[in-house]
Length: 239
Length: 269
Image 1: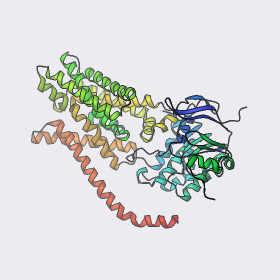
Image 2: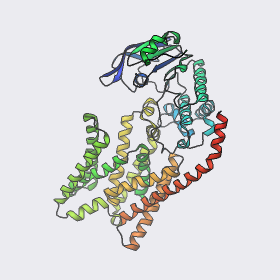
Image 3: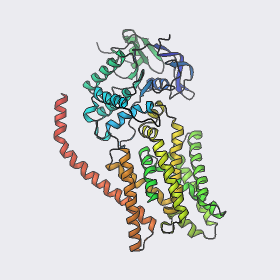
C-alpha cells in the first residue's frame, strides 16, 4: 500500500516553456503539513497550481493520491490567493461556502442533508457562521478569507492546497487557521500551504524555502537555518 | 418581454463575469453576417450566427496566438466587423433603411416567426443557465476554483459565449444589434445593487427588463419616439436611479455603522 499522498520527483514547474523552479523532490504522508516559504515570485503559487492541476509540470513527475494532479477534484481542495475577483457578486458568505460542495455535487445532484450538515460544520468551525447571511461584498478582507477557507473545508478533501491562507488575517485569524489546519491533520488530511510568515512553519513536518529554486527543504529547524534564510530573503530572522 | 427575460438570464452572467465588452463586440460582430445574409436573401438569423462565430473565433485566435489582451483583440475585431458590416450594407440599394433596422431593431414590426425564434432562444438560454449554474458561479469568483472543482473551464467559457451569442442573435431583430447590449447589461447591472443571490439578481433583471420594455413602448407611442431606443433608455435610467439609491443607502449605512464598528474593534483588542 502507498503511504505517500504527494510524490514529486525531478519536478520542474513554470508557465509554458518558462521554468520557475527546477528539480523539486518531496513526498508527503497523510496528516503531514508542508509549508512553502519565499518572496513573491519565488515559485510558491506555481508549485501549488501545479499540484492542483492548473499548470502542467514542465518535466519530471508528480502524483497526488496515486493519480495525476487535477484528476480527483473531490479529494483535493485548492484555496487560490486573493480569490475574490469581483466585489459586485451578489452572494452571501453562506452561498460562497456552499460552492465548496460543487465538486461533489457535479452539475445535477441536489444538495443532500449530509451536504447541508457539512456546510453548517464548516461555517461553525471557521466562525463564518457569525456573518453567513451577509453579502460577501460587505465583509472585511479577513472575513472574506475565512469564508473561502470554510469553502475549502466543505470539500472534505484528503489533500488541502492553501495559497497564503493567513494573508489579511489578524493574530486571532491566524490562530484560527492554525487550529483548523491542526484539526484537519488529525483527521489524516495532508496540508500544503504557501506563506510569507515564518511562524506558520512552526508545526510543519517539512518546510521548503523557495527563491526560484529550492533553497532548502526539510524539518523546520533544518530548512530555516540562518544561512538558508539569508540566501532566500537576504536577511536572517532576529533571535 | 421574451427579449427582456432572455437578456436578463444571459446578462446576469455577462455582468458577473465582466464580459460586457464581449457582449458589445458580439452584437456588432453579427452586423456583417446579417448584412451579407440579407443581400443573398438568406435569413438574417443564420447570417448573425455565422458573424458571431467568426467574431468569437477571431477573439480567441488573437488572444491565444498573439498574446494580446482580450480587450485589444475584441476592440480590434469589433471595429473591423462593424466597418465590414457598414461596407456591405452600403453596397445594398436599400442601405440606409437596412442599416437602421439592423442597428436599432424594429420593436413594432415583430413578426410571429421572430417571436417563435425568441421563445426558443429563451428556452435554450434558460436551460444553459440551469445546466451550467454551478460552473458559471464558480467561474464568476475564480477560474481556478471552477477548474479545481472538476469543471472544464474552456468548455463552460465557450458555452457562456454561445449563450450570449444566442441572446444577441435572437434579440437583434426586435431591439437591434446596438441596443441589445443595453438590454443585456442595464437590467442585470441594476440587479447587482439590490440582489443578495444570483437567482434574485436574474429575477430583478427580468422584471426591470419587462418594465423597461412596456414603459419604453408607451413613451415612444405617446411622444412618437423610436421604440427600441426608448426601451433601452428607460432601462439605463432605472440603472441610474438604482445607482443613486445605493449611494444614498451606503452613506446612511456608514453613519449607522460607526458605532458597531467601534464595538468590533474593542472586541478584537
